[in-house]
Image (cartoon, rainbow, N blue to C red):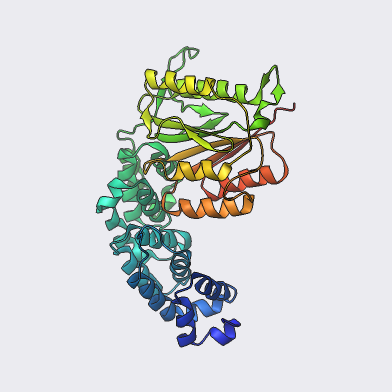
Length: 398
């Protein structure tokens, strides 16, 4: 049994617990380290050896990285020492993309590992950068956390070619830069702004009510939330409570009308699908499809045929979405209540499970609560907050 930290703090014992075959023992040792931050830096060498031990014995499915491995990499990242930076650089060179992403996340979270930037930038050239949306997000978010002209250069280059959710996030970050980020050099700052003025790919729409017909950025919206993603999933609760009436129609009918308007506003370059759920999740299209007129008509027909019945299996709906397509950038989850059925029902456990599963997907999860209160509202707020999204309350009782 693992006793107190003082009993397990000697390097041989600590290494034994951190590299134990049993995940609960590893996690308990990690929890004790987190409770005593001074022990983390003091045992940095042990942490690095434990990570190597984990790498030497990968799981049968290499994409399933144990939680303890992720925690170990994060602990190393929390140490502001050259040895910690060197270990993160080593991990960035791993053949396993999940290990690279975990190292990048640690670099971004603690932002004092400037020495890792050259190797971090090299990840842009890896095949995984082109193939995996989650990989791109981890690498570029980490780059954005390091104050360096080289980081700005890479992000500026990527902003010219990336669209969708990640392109929006990068451009939003670059918009915050000032001359101070260029060491006060006005000439460099002005030159950089000229580079940024190059071709960008926002969604454009001409507003008929504008007398000058200026071109304006006008992303589609779902209940007031801007849609910046190019590839998205809409998850709609159709449980029995969605039959409750307001303003002459059920909650579900109002949602169908709102989502239909959203779909009509999507440009054809967008890719989307829909998941409805009550006791079980039902997928409209198993793969994302382009937002053509035909697909929009089909999707709106699918929505029109939905009816309210059953309980609320939120966990199944979310896991279905997470494993549906490698390229999904954003999820919009709409519900009017707390989960009531499924493999996992407790909101706190769903939150932990989904957030962990999203570690290597980096999908932005937005949530829309239809007159939710109490634990249901807290769950939806936290789900959005912990997964980079926004929460919107729609009050149908007013």
